[in-house]
Image 1 (tube, rainbow over the protein chains, first blue to last red):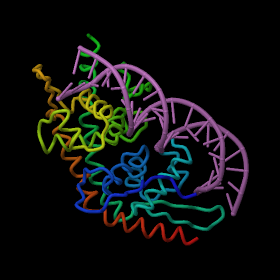
Image 2 (image 1 turned 45 degrees about the horizontal axis):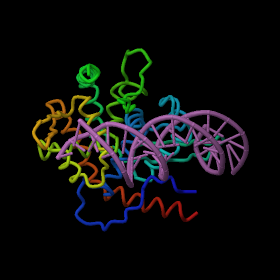
Image 3 (image 1 turned 90 degrees about the vertical axis):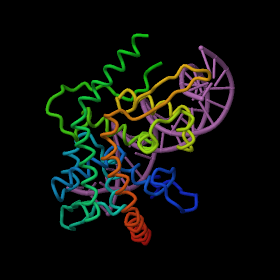
Length: 136
Length: 136
DNA sequence: CGGTATCCTGAAAGATACTG
DNA sequence: CAGTATCTTTCAGGATACCG
């Protein structure tokens, strides 16, 4: 059954894509990036190069087989990662970034770097906010 | 009730933050960014400057009042946007990016620009993938 | 080894009605 | 105007068992 419901039906006519509009294709991509494991997988493959399924599952401690498979399938479908099967025994499968996937590394890196650099400020803001709101 | 459950309990000791690790604070931020409306709100405020509640709801056609409020609250708590109440009658509330929020515009822009630039390739990849898989 | 196939649950999203 | 309260629906995510 091939309905992971990743790409929901886009019924609107495809014209004048506002990158911020609802139901627009580029928005789909953002949704996928925002999904729980996609960024993690991309990051792992970006730093390690080719990885096997089990390797990935270990690096991303906590991911279930189902979610890892689902994430990998979606990324593969979007052309961001390449899946190669080596029909040995036991079977071996390797995942790696495609050239297209490589081009996404920059933007992704910018975002994670931002979060690392500014997490302190965010945490402070939260603390201050909670105090302000709690005191009422 | 102030438990939007945005920030789930981080029980682990705070040491050696791997930006990719589960439950790490910077990961929280990414999760929030990935949430359905946060990027849209940030984008809107980034381009328009200060906006009122109703203005935002109209720009982001499709958002429910509840989700908009929730998104705005979380972003405010994280110190990314500023909420200003003008106690006139009728009341007026304006939202705008904080300096911290401004620093996030770049990374966010990089990501949306990527999606606009490469959406064609992604769509092609999907088509090819579906054909490959369907034919089996 | 590298997955599917099922079932289940909690949280997210949405609809609707009401309010300071 | 700018929300809050409440209810319902949806569905991502996880647990488990099994398969080529």
